[in-house]
Length: 416
Image (cartoon, rainbow, N blue to C red; front, side):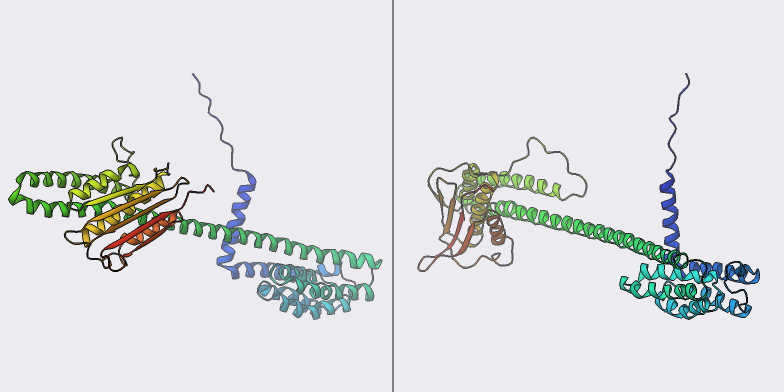
């Protein structure tokens, strides 16, 4: 069975032309002098041929013009084109005397039309106000020719030359507008790309900070609980082996939980795409997990007393996580810094509008926890609180009470 292959369409002619033009422009930007030399040599050769072949006599209005003057004028109009891009105003001023001589003597050489290239580059590369004097300056020799050596009406001598000057200027302005527009688009694209990269870096930094905060809250708390259980188990080993065994079991359970959470967080930091979530993965804690948290702290040897005012409202998961993490960090600091025989009190107050107030106090040694200024504990709590427009106060309890107090207040959640 014969197979029919679909004919692939060829490259559009416009794309091919644009690619060729882009290559020519790129070469011109790298080697501008080569293009200037070639263009100048072309017009110089044309001027010499016009002189040597007496072609100028076909258009001149004064056949008696000396040949040496014809050669001088041809060379004077062609050679300065080498600097037309870098010094167009200077070239125009330098060739104006030649143009006036050409008009006054009636030679009317075609090489004078090379001034149109200079007008074009003035419109392309210099302020547009320069055209206000450049075009009248170029038009002056035309008026002189029409006055001294008329050939028909003044309109026939002046209007075509004026239209040529305006066309050269309009082409320069159009190319300049297109170039400026393209440069603006390229600059905007570069800025957007830079902003996109900056936003990506900021998002990455924020995500890593969030992960670091989670690691501090989870791993730090579990290690503090393990330390408390280990200390209690060491003292219980001599008097109550059964309680020591319970402490070891609690240490093993807490360690496994910490290891599971550590693996979950480290998976996020991998360069490759993370694996799909497992059904058994532990979700973010909520207010219903506070009892489990407090029980673990109690097993670690810290007596904790809780008081609740009001019924817990249906808070969004993020606000519940903030309350949980603040209580967790406060109890962790108590385990670390309060010393032996310390106790902790937790007061939770809910109102009908959804505001939450949490106060955690302990009866420890007081003073500032070691990570309050330079670590991630209290700064992490303040960052979480700020996300929901809340306030966090942390510091020693007022005299004569001893210990530390952390107070969190989250206002009602107002829909945006």
